[in-house]
Amino acid sequence: MAQIQVCVLFCSYNIASVDVSHIATELLIHQHFLQLHPASPALGSGGALHLPWEPKVLCRWAAAFKCRMECRDVPAETLYDVLHDIEYRKKWDSNVIETFDIARLTVNADVGYYSWRCPKPLKNRDVITLRSWLPMGTDYIIMNYSVKHPKYPPRKDLVRAVSIQTGYLIQSTGPKSCVITYLAQVDPKGSLPKWVVNKSSQFLAPKAMKKMYKACVKYPEWKQKHQPHFKPWLHPEQSPLPSLALSELSVQHADSLENIDESAVAESREERAGGAGGEGSDDDTSLT
Image (cartoon, rainbow, N blue to C red; front, side, top):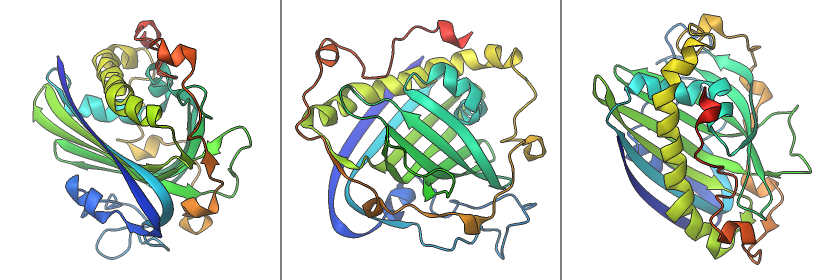
């Protein structure tokens, strides 16, 4: 059984350099973000990946979400696997349009693509993110933020959003239980209508967490049928991804992307009738 506590905060920023370290601190990740495996060839002194930029971005508007879920019958390691397993995500994440890994930077940092459906009739979004992960005993951290990749420019059919800083903190509370805290600061690159703000906090965020929980319960059985020993996030030698030099990436500044004004967009009839705007149904048949 899962207990879900959701707190959603929407913030408005002027055009300025936004330091999000205070958000990272709340997740207890500021000292671990982008720390890497000791065997990584990209490590500098002190065991950290040295970036050619500061983790700050320019933004006009950003939404900050914080969700917390207690899972009384899901081990922390299972939840960690579910968040990493990109093939399984395509099964349980009904928001996803397309997702794939692009390249690896180190043994525990990579770059990937993710596009998702937004509540109708808003335009759908996508991101390119640099992701880093770190096991800490029985606890786990996954973090990402937006970067620019020369081979994956913004698409005309999607709005390129910006992950300012997004992360998961998974804390074990027992052999078969854990707590996950999800914290995201995202610039959707658009002025959103009030109904989207309300729906995100009251419906979409809790439902997404519940779907994640259901996916975790079914993951061990699914994984046994789909390359049960293939877990490159635990065994980096299994990764088929090409290596990528950090110099080929740059931070994605929100102000360099087109801003879409959707503040006057009305909720569709389907949404008003209770549709989840891309969340899909709660049918679990796809998880087999």
